[in-house]
Length: 273
Image 1 (cartoon, rainbow, N blue to C red):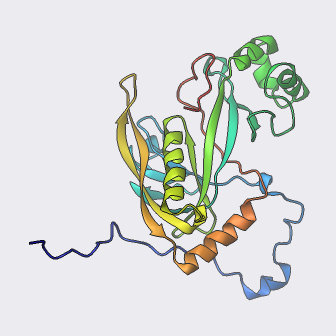
Image 2: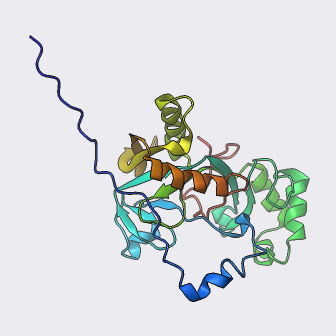
Image 3: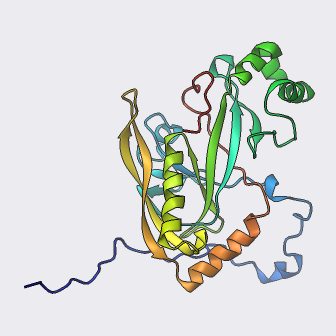
């Protein structure tokens, strides 16, 4: 005889998603948004979730322990889990100066073909871009001849990031899941899971719990990665908030301020695995 069917139990606690924006004082009502008239979305840097690793600077600063998740701007510690509504998926490629040349960010691309300024990301186009920015890169060029730098660049020292801005409980602006290397696989799994829940549902109609899990690299190094579980569809209020965020973000490129990879990518390979 079959036993009585058990009712489904909630997977986890479900926080309320909503804005933490401070209320605008009444005396500022006549000046809403003034001063920002000539800014573009590209002028702002979206904060991101930092998944703290053993060598992350947040440990030395006493902000977090390995495996904890931290807000990149405020350094708020979320513990080992976050509750998010993913809004959309975009990408960026960052060109890092090799560490043996001093390290540092050289260029950004939003399509994997051109820098954000329009130069080709390889060969003479990139060389011209570097030369045109000689003032900005004066310190870099002083440390290494441009031809040596170009040889390194032609070995494709670009890091590929999947960026997923998210609505998060208690935050007034979107915070991005910025996924590269092994984390990018998690991003692809998220997109697949979202489509499987319902093939016609918008990405921002679903919510998830992301949490940290320990893993080991092929070289035997311990590190933390993201894992997630679905919490189903959003409520109507959550959906309205996420849709408003989507409408504000979809026409523009979304950039995040990244940290350089801990290791230089293998020669001849892009770090999009």
